[in-house]
Image (cartoon, rainbow, N blue to C red; front, side):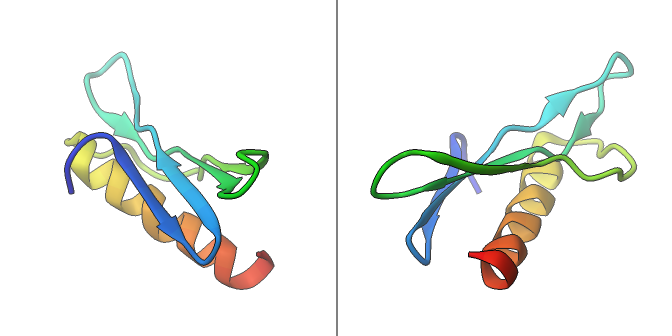
Length: 73
């Protein structure tokens, strides 16, 4: 997975934006938008432990965003 952490999935655009912490770790964060209109549908910021790398945090955010689309999209 390379930056920018974005992908199209079932008519949605998933944008993963890991948030850095003061300790230098990264929290998963994703924005789910409708691909056709770019209207934000939801944001996903789980209450999870921070990750050591941006890629780990982005991968987790992407998995959670895909699960959200599968359940609610």
